[in-house]
Length: 337
Image 1 (tube, rainbow, N blue to C red):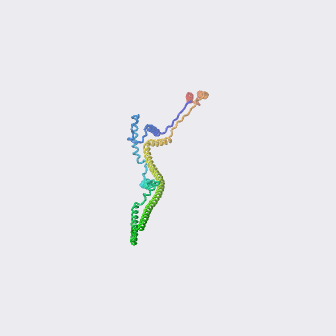
Image 2 (cartoon, rainbow, N blue to C red):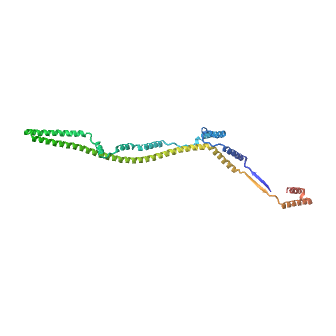
């Protein structure tokens, strides 16, 4: 059986494009991919000089592409001045949250202190609240009492002198009784003044305890307010930190995208070129067709030979119908079979 192959080729310019594409693909596959400039390339341990030189060349080309693509590089807008001002105010407010309560907390702590217990401690506490001028007040009061007592004693003596009994026994008893009563009244006056000062000190001490208790409650409320303020400040600072983190991440993404564009620009250009060449080759498709021609069977060969011989015989016997040309054609046909 004979096989006949027919190949239809696209135009020559299409074949040239395909060969050029194949060369570029092979050449690009051997170029290392780098995303840094020449200053960031250092030879690694075990790296051959040829590989290091190839990476250096790729780094130079990367810098060139990065410079060429500077106008297309992604950018991130910075924070607006109003945003910066708002952030500064928020940070200052957060920093002054707990700090604003600190002086009150310290004063309350100093005022609360420890309150003594027991009789001796009670007297010490009360003495702290008694008037510092108490002794002067008592001395002045007793001096006035003594002056009045002396006046009254002199009046009694004057009466006794008028009656002519001054120095008599009854007169002496009268003066002694007056002196005893005066001394008793003087002691009662002094005790009353001391008791009054003590009561005033005890009252002031009780007021101080109440004040300290109020300060303790105020401290508790300030502590709760401080805790709430701290929680608010933490949330506020966390939000500001997230904003700054998002800003920094956007800038990093923009830098990474710019580096990616510069690093993979040759591959992208090659992909676009390949897509265009593929589209052109699709319009001029090549084609290969194969046709199988079966060999004649023995019967077909015998019949063909017989008919050929019959034609030759007829030409010889009746030349006017076929002629020698027909004989030659029949002979050639027989040879071809």
